[in-house]
Image (cartoon, rainbow, N blue to C red):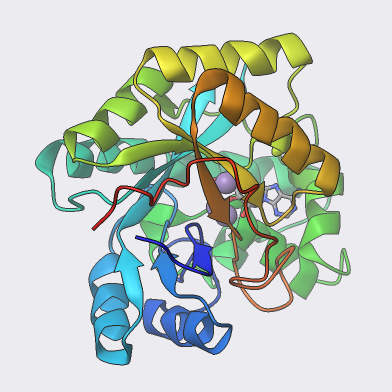
Length: 280
Ligand code: AMP
Ligand code: MN
Ligand code: MN
Ligand code: MN
């Protein structure tokens, strides 16, 4: 496969995106994307709708998912799985387990937020959730903006929802090897999502790449929606050093809420092997 404009990471209303899967496909086409993956958090429920819309509109589409993983000392990292059998029972069961703690975590988050004067956050966040099992910090952020406590979701994260802030509740997600296993068992390629967004020291970062590689991880997002030039150079170097396939990914969540729109990222450095190189 040799797409001119691949975008292999975005979110629909099935997780914390603002557009339904079919609307996302339409927007991708309008933006000139010619290969799209839908990668909702811990859930594959939007894929059939997206795949049908993509087929009807003539857009190449691959299946995907973004799995929440606990790493090291209470860090969360995200592993994207691409081009997999989204009905594979092991993947489906694994994702169900990862989702299962979200509701109780949301209750705890709401209690913490109430203590700092933001009441009704659980019910408020739920209004923004398509699928209650997928209640996430993004939905809380939208409610807090609605209440006028902050001008936008980014500010909400800075003040209330990022690690160390009052509404942050730590949580056990999947382990790295099991997430990579579910993806590989389902026939897919595991990719480290937005590697520059984790608050890790350089040594911890390398430990993550090494552990990921050791358990069968194959790819990394060299170009992510939030990457700047220096970050792209850094991660391209990591891809060369560790022999990772390179992915290109907007991480689009919705108009007005994302770093970049679908398909609007720079191209991958030409010497890297893209994740899609061997796809039919
Ligand atoms: P959760 O899976 O519930 O922990 O929520 C994580 C989601 O919150 C991510 O997938 C992003 O969509 C969003 N998010 C995390 N950090 C930020 C941030 N600093 N600004 C805006 N959105 C963020
Ligand atoms: Mn998200
Ligand atoms: Mn992510
Ligand atoms: Mn994402």
